[in-house]
Amino acid sequence: MGRPQAAVRGARRAQRQRRSCSAGAGHRRSGARRAGPLAQGGRPPHPPAVRVRRRALRERAAGDVLPQPHRPVAPGAGAGRADGRCAGRDARIRRRHDRGPPRRGRAVTPAPTIGIVGNDVPRQLVSAAGALPRRLTGSWSGPIGAEAAAHLGAVDPVTARILTELLGPGSPALDAIVVCNDSQAHLRLFYVLRMMGDRGLPPVHLVDLPRQDDPATRRFAHVQFTRLAEFCIRITGTAPDASAWRRAAAGERAVGDALARLRARRRTRPAAVSGTAALQALLIAATVGPEDAVAALDAAEVRTDLSALRVHITGSDHPDPTLYATLEGQGVTVVSEDHDTGELSWLGIAVEGEDLDTVVRGLVAAHFARPGGSAVATIAERAALSRASAESAGAQVALALVRAGDEAPLWDLAASARALADAGIPLVRRTGLTPENVAAALADAATELRTRGGEPA
Image 1 (cartoon, rainbow, N blue to C red):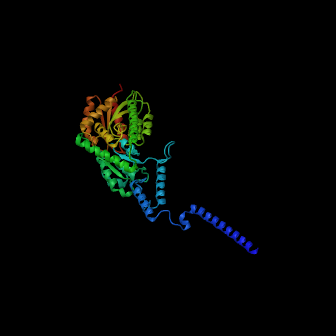
Image 2: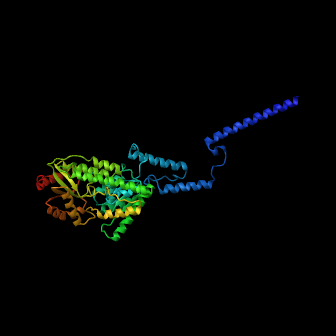
Image 3: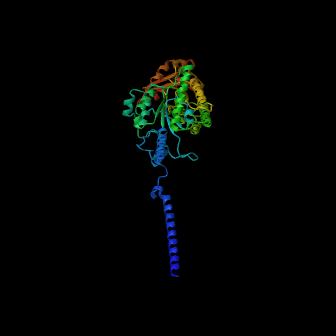
C-alpha cells in the first residue's frame, strides 16, 4: 500500500509543478507584451535588412517633404522611428504656436504658408496645392537692418524692410518664398535670399514673367507657371486633383466678386468706404485664404463726407495704408489707385479647369490681359491706365506719390499728367518721399489738391 500512495503523491507533486510552470510562462508572456519581444531575450520582430530598408525610406521621405523646410534638421533626425516622429511633432507644435490657435471647425494642423513678394503669382496655383498664399509688402517706415542694407545696396527701401523682417527674430512662419521679377529690387532680393539659404531661411523660387504678348512669350509664361505649381507641390507634398482645382477656382472667384463689390462702394457718391479702409482690406486679402479674404473685403465700410475731394492715387505702391490715412485726415477721399498693392493686386482671378495644363493656359491669358505696374508696363500703358482708373472712379484730381529709391514711376508722370489733363483731371506730384519728409509733403499736397481740384460737383 505504501508504494501506490507514494506514486500518487509523486504524481500530484508533478501535476502541481506543471501548473506552476504554466502559470509562470503565462506571466512572462504578459510581461513580454508590455516590454517588447527583446525583453524576453527573443529575436527582433524583423530581420536587420528590413529595418535598414524601412529606415532608408523614412529618411528619403523626410528629405523630400519636410513639415517646415526652412528649419534645419538635426543630424540623424528621422534615422530612427521615434526620432522621426518627434521631429514632425515638434515642427507641428512650432507652427501652431507661430500661427495662433486653430479656428473652430478647421483642422488643427495649419496649411503650409508660402510668402509672395511681388504681384505676378496667381493665388489659384498656390491654393490648389494646399498652401496659403501670403503676400509680403514691407512698410513705408520702420528700421532697415544693417545686414539687409549691405546685401541689397541702393534699392527701394520697402524691399529692404522685407528682408529685414525675414532675417529678424519675429519673422513670419513661412514654408517657402516666391519672389516675382517685377522690379529690379525684387530680383535682387531673390538672389540675396538664395545666397543666404544656409541661414535657415525657407526655400525660394523665382517667377519671371514676360510682358510682351506673342506666341513665344506665352510659351515661356506657361513654363513659369508650371514650375511655380511644381514648386508649391514639392512644398506641400500634395498634387492637386480635379476637385482641388475646382475648389481653388471657386475660392478665387468668390474673392473676385468681393473685389467688385468693394470697387462699387468706392465709386458711390459719397464713397461708401474710405480709401484707407479699402487699401487695408486689399492688403489683408492678399495675406489670407479666400474665405477670410472675402470677409475682409466685405467688411470695409467707412462712409465718407459728400463734400470730400475725390482723389486718384498713382506712383509707388503702398505697402501699408499709412499715407492714405494721413491724406484722408486732410479732408479728401481716395476713391481709386493704379498701383499693384491696391486695385491692381492680382486677387480674384479664377480659371476653370481640372488639370494643371488647362489652368495654366487660362492663367497665362489672364496675365497678358491685366495691366502692369510702373516697373513692367510701358509709359503709354501707364498713362492710359491712370486716366481710365481716375475717370471710372469719378476722381476730381490725381496725386502721384513716389518714394525715394523707387525710380520707375518717375518715368510715367509726364505722360500721365497729359492723359489726365485731357480728361480734365489735374495731377499733383510729390516725389522723393521718405519717413522723415512724408508728413509735411502730404499736408502740402492736400492744400494743392483742394486748390487745383476745386469743389466737388
